Length: 612
Image 1 (cartoon, rainbow, N blue to C red):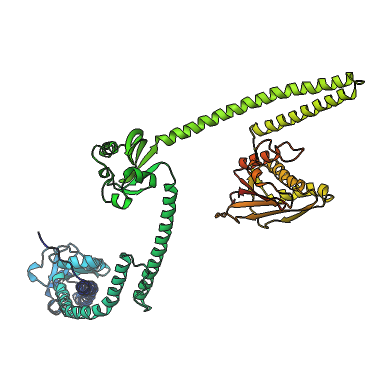
Image 2: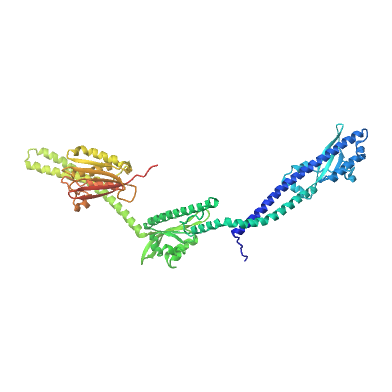
């Protein structure tokens, strides 16, 4: 096998300069040859024109002296004309023949006497040769040679007598071009040694920064992204070095961003219950989450060295399933497989999807879904459906209870009217019955409000404005009872998505409870803020604190339960509705309290998405 020869930069530079010298010399030679050929043709045309005019002038004199004689015969006898023609052909460098022909094309006088009396063939005009381009002229010179003619019309007393034809040979003109070509070749032979010497000298100067840049790029390739540029000069090499340094900084920033993003994706993926495995085109795993690692039973760094199917024994059900799919290059969806995981059998639903573009395969993804999780979700859905059915049932029962209560109230009033003169004990008993029917009716009403499905109209809301409305509504009533309101609203509070009426009623209940918890008066502090206790930047916090009696610690876990109340005249529905309203808005409500010091409600909502 022939060994491939690899040239170094210095050798390439020498070869390059040599080729450059050859190209320069060849280019200048071609240009020079083109220009020289044009000059030679123009010089030949000028000389032929000059000779033609001399002969034409001699012909006019000769014909004027021979008036009355046949012009052809007079020209043949003119020895001076012949001597002039012979002298012109002998002295001109490119002229090969001169002929005086009549109107029929026969030679009357010819520099070659043997051709006199014969028809002279018509040749291409010298003007046509001059009109050719550089390549055309060179081709005319070296395509076997040829003769071009310059023609001067000859007239006698206004009548055409014939013409003077002067033949110019391209072979003779080619001699001058050959001499110029030989000089160009000699110049190229002298330029080559100088090119080699120049290459050796320049390589030391040019290759020094190039070697430094090569080392710098090598360090970048090895992952040393914090290296500095090796050159500080201001030329193109220095600019390239600065660009390489900036490239290293950008690569380092991109690597940090990629590491951060990969860690974030890994964190999200690891929280999924389903196993996800991404494979390259060779079937090797490039990524999988924690759930998949438990099934593969091999760390990703080790598993990435071989195809995924080789991580399992030959009898493993996943191996045979994936091998068939990779062989047929066909994916599948939700195939049930039982595999051993951590010493126990787990039922999985396995799916395989292949990715590709128009030209090649990009890889595949394996999705491993746990059957137990699916059963749990189905159980939750079934339980929710049962709860909804139970809610509808209890709502119907509550309605059925409410109707008799209304009837009992009506007949109780009729009974009181008929027993107007009855003893006082009877009327007191009827009042007790009415009061208990009313209490039972309020319980049923609260229960209906709590279990009835609630439709909410979500719109962007300004909580600062909503809380301002609530305080204005209560301030007039409670100022006389020594209750004061202190408002601390965040000036740039983001809007939240909420139902105005539901949230208004919820905040009204909380603030009203705070006022009622201070029978001797005090201050209710209402504050809004953004993200003061959580690690996100899109949470709006509302804090409502009073200076009232407080809630015993044993009751804190029950205050949101339906019908639980510590007030003598309370029904235990208000805070339950507050809790339900906050849940409907995907919010969270917390309460802290100290007996004798006061209670604080903290309510959190997600801020509404920013609009462009």
